[in-house]
Length: 409
Image 1 (cartoon, rainbow, N blue to C red):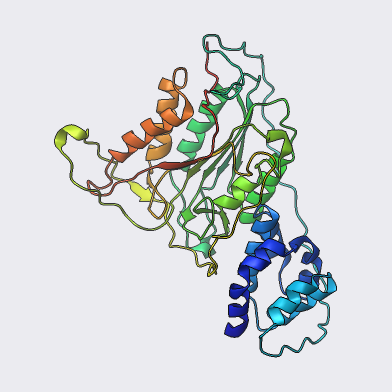
Image 2: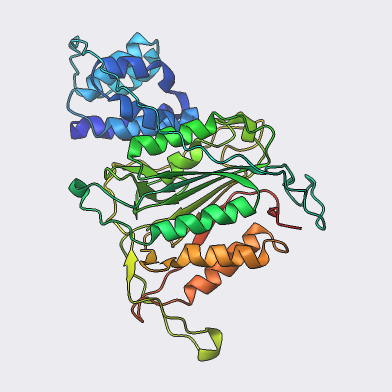
């Protein structure tokens, strides 16, 4: 896109985000070849109408020289004349030539293989002790089973991606599968998924009827990278080397796109790097930390920061809401601080998962999830890779109440 047209879009960003109706533009932009179907799917998954409008304008800047005039043409065709006039006001003359519609070839989506879980041999009696009720203080977590847990375990990456295989990830996957079954979740494991398969798996999860359950969990074990965002940082890679932003992953299950999970906790655990920086830490008094040294085969899940056109700020006003905000009841737990690598021992698994599994085993019966994650943060922060590098997990917490998992009585 020409620089003058980019400046027009940036100058009118607030009006576009406030007034643009993206849903009416998708067919025209697809037929005129401005966007691909994958790009439109990404925009649709970005969230509210404002979020979609914002993402559409960002992506538009990355397209060719005909993108701006074709965008104006789509605005006129869909009756959004005021915005079209606003963008043309003071702009260099734009000759809109009718574009020859291109044939839209939609990809054939192959269904994912169905992983059949063994039939539950018995229904576990509800644990006693803690009061299980939905209250101002705590989420209701007494459904039997509690909910679905999807684990995506990417281990073997295609050679063309130059991404190393993640030796030791199967250890993490086995631990978490056992742990969340013990916490009374229906666990489904999917291995070595490409980008589109990750999206299809999340979409299938979002379309399930969760009305009889109290919670939903998504765990992703993969390589990761740092990407631009306006809510949740980071992205995870499919085995084909194409990434999915964490922000888009959470959108599949938010209150807008998955009504049967509205008001219920949605938990995301991400074992992947947030970027390529390595933290060497800082010196503290010996009595402040218990020394711990990582294994000799420590590896990282880091990929350099992904390039993304994001010249627009996100300071415009949010949509007014009559109900709960879209990201409410979501918690994203990251194995490392955004921008930094995450360490994984090829023999014993990742620092983060190993610690999370053990602390859940020891403390889930007595402590809430946020307290448990603070314990994980503290223990992982005391590890050292090669006696030098550190790691600091963290969470983006939009839960409204305390969350206590079900445990064996």
